[in-house]
Length: 431
Ligand code: LLP
Image: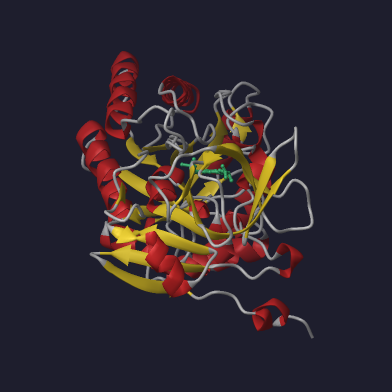
């Protein structure tokens, strides 16, 4: 199986984090998100250990909460000693409510409003990742008004185009994020930041994209960033103390996806950075990375109940489930691959090629195509694996479908951490 938290028990049922998921589907109803807390902790520790070993004790992984933003995740991040990446006042609020120490938070976004800037400062967010000139001035003003100095990083577009879906590639020059090195704008923003009395420029940030399997684009981005730091020292006499390399390392969604050795990737990146720093006689900066997907994706699973099987001769078989694009829009948006299995009949022959369809009034509401399953029957439980990242966080109420519940699995116990939305929830903001 694609992850070591999956197994099959003696009655042929899928188990996740050691629990029979067919039983969980009966207990909590479907659609249902499951979350394996031990897996999340394991991933945090892989990053923390690898970063401290490769970059030194000051290095820190920051969990990118956009992948899954709920209060409970910030309890885990606090306990694991992680930092966090936040992208909106709503994420800051959620993390604060989860008891996260906000001095270890980095605030992202290409358009922080004045209200966001004020909210983040009042919440004690440690670092702003400053995207542009207007934001820099807004931070300066807000910090001045509060009689404080705000630490920032500047977001830089390193000009890297990794092999990933266009919609989740962010590091090229033509991007809405950050200031590009090649155009000279990253250097200009640096000079401006150094003139602001209430802003302390700590260094730089870059993020090249998401779901990237290769190590090379990360190594290249790190190399470009160190060269940039060296150039800035030469022209402006400023030496960056911190370098944040963003997130983006891939996870396995399919059996034929390669296994990713995160620790090894980190070691390779560190080697290259040390080499270039030595070449320019630069001190190694403090390093941050921002994994989101690779922390939570395989800690998640979604369970659905099969409603119908519709076979259209000479075309295909649609199996319809009780969820779909409202709880997982990723196939509709990016044609993202997923492994789908019949949780209550894991040992049966997979004799039917199916298109998994949701129940929205929209043909594009699919979860996956070309999936081999035992001939689906009404009442079967389908498990879509690796849904911990960018599923609940991107969920909607399209077609007025309430969002599913979420159950946390930990130490053999199951605990409801998110109640299923009700119809009342759907209209609660209507006046
Ligand atoms: N840091 C920054 C500045 C980011 O923009 C992102 C993701 C991350 C870190 C975390 O990247 P990760 O380690 O999760 O790849 N909705 C898309 C993914 C969008 C990613 C946006 N930024 C999806 O479902 O695939």
